[in-house]
Image (cartoon, rainbow, N blue to C red):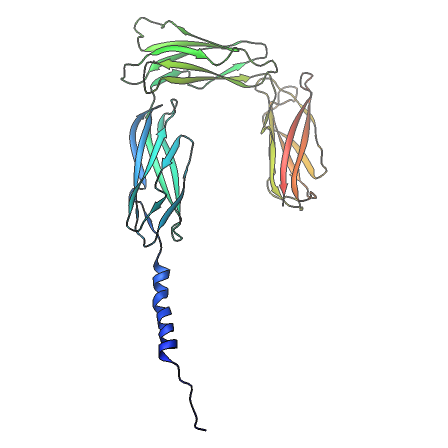
Length: 343
């Protein structure tokens, strides 16, 4: 029989391969692309408490459908509305609303992250800035921190002065609850037409400790009709613990050789002594160290308690408790919860 050589069929084999090589680049190049010409929007000067809006133009300069999956803002004071999709070549606008707070002052900068389905550029970061001009000035500064001792009634007078050229006035004051009182006092001098005095009284909680009270100032400004005035009572004779819950972080079965977390125990007025620290787990070891100079009796006002993890915990969430004993008859011990995650 004659020798027949196998020859490729050009119409079925070579042509198909050529078509595949011809079509592959087209499929690979079809992709969306988000283009934002303005990455930073400056609102300018804004009175604290007012609302402002900004617009960021968007364009899909790619060759496939652009999907805007999410716009994440850095705080709840900023909200965004935007088109969910843009066809190739289509333009759109990302609209941002900033609701400023009455106590803001100076430069405020907010961040936005636009996430989309562009693999080469899955997100775009935007900035929104404003120079905040307060409507009023406060003396002492708002929020106001006032020291007190257990059993005392907290009392503070705050002077409020118009800080802008607007014709604005304080028209009233409302306390937050039955444990707080507030009233407008006459100005200190006849020439203080743009200054007011607010007297705040607050009864601390029976258990003592730090606390906060808020009163609301009513103003004649329609854009900023109310301004909070916050007073924080700082207990001078009570023991405080920071943090109130000790997070040990993510651990393993082996001992943690990194820097240990630290509990801080302090009293603003008066020294004391930490007698003993106990944990409910043999996997933890504690070390006590004073953080300030001792008094004549060798007692301190600040202590740091380092908590070392020695290993041995099983995988999962690990809750527990640290007990600190104090040489104070009023507060003989403090119980501090802790939490850890073992991988």
